[in-house]
Image (cartoon, rainbow, N blue to C red; front, top):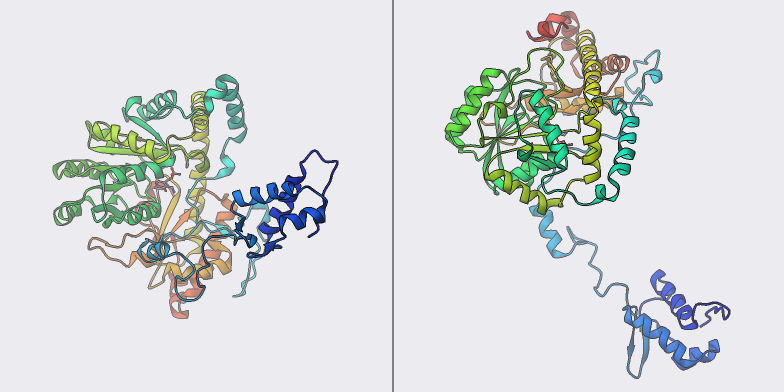
Length: 536
Ligand code: PMP
């Protein structure tokens, strides 16, 4: 065997030999079971002392790369001590315990976020070809679940990071306090108070996004098989979480005023749920805002039946018109409602900062659960957020976001009115990010999606948002509905995207249906009664 040795090098010769052989073994150029040359022989070939070769072999043996067999020599070991699994047959490539998981595990019903390039205002085609096979270089996406990243005050935030690092130094990179950075919790308490929700910093727990708050509450209060009530439809990420925990998820029907609380008592008696999960403000996906009367009824019923309420207020700040309704938590004198919210939609989701508000033993337990789940939410980001929110720029950012999103909502409602056929039903939302749309006839949004993609527009199909057990409600919405995010695209792109959606729908309708739809097309045919309130 020839091993290049550098006798001038500071690296000892035995290490050079070892490194050469190690490299050969790890890359496979010296195959498993190869017998290495006898130490005496290799020492002679290389012109080194036999001890030098023995030391090199000993290092390789210590790392499990070779083994010496008495009287036989030194052999290269296979890279894994285990024999490879046979590659044919179902589940064969995985060890047995993994094969078990394959059949037991829950599968996410929510597809990943569509990775499509988004169109910017300048890139819109002047003239659109109407051909069936038209492929646009850029999709216009209404599928996402967040606000417009372009509005994020990146420069202010960069400065806030620098200021915090200068001010707090390495302390900002410690784990930090158990419940979260106290000044941030105080700031959140002030913001909540300005919205009519009195919360004390001691009752706020900072979480890694509100998704973690959802997970902590579920882990603490629920066990596999427990029934829970959710609005039908509801946020797909919550459904995924509940399914992953093996919960029995039962839907309560909704309408344009949110959860149909008049149906709640019957479901409470029938299922004895262990939790009610609700999104009262600008619901995901429907955009509906729960009426004040229903909020009061819900709190009273949950109390009567001793069921905790998990209130998800993910975009409560984004109201464009109408009167603000009290948070359920504000109607709870203490201990009944767990409130969660997030900075993901008002700022950026990658900050991963959300929070919950709870009182009583449940709060202490949630703090412990948070601890065992991920020890802490980024201390640095919490401090930066606190610094940023406190200088008043946050309020200015909120005002600007509301202005921009309101215009976009109006642009989308107008475009829907203009370009979609009759029979499409829309409940104009008073805030938030989403418009929920009901297709006419037997149109399935899942089947529409590939056609829409061909036309160059995407949306979230309704089936992503429905629980398995619809609690006795009609399941047709499941297929007929779709969610549009109006917040991420500028008005011109909204107009263009909805035009494309209209074309996709027309392609889907039979020629007769299409003609009828065109004849009937007009504002009153589509927007529900609440459209008057939004001025669209
Ligand atoms: N609740 C709702 C209703 C949501 O739409 C989302 C995100 N899409 C979340 C909670 C979780 O968001 P995050 O963890 O980023 O706060």
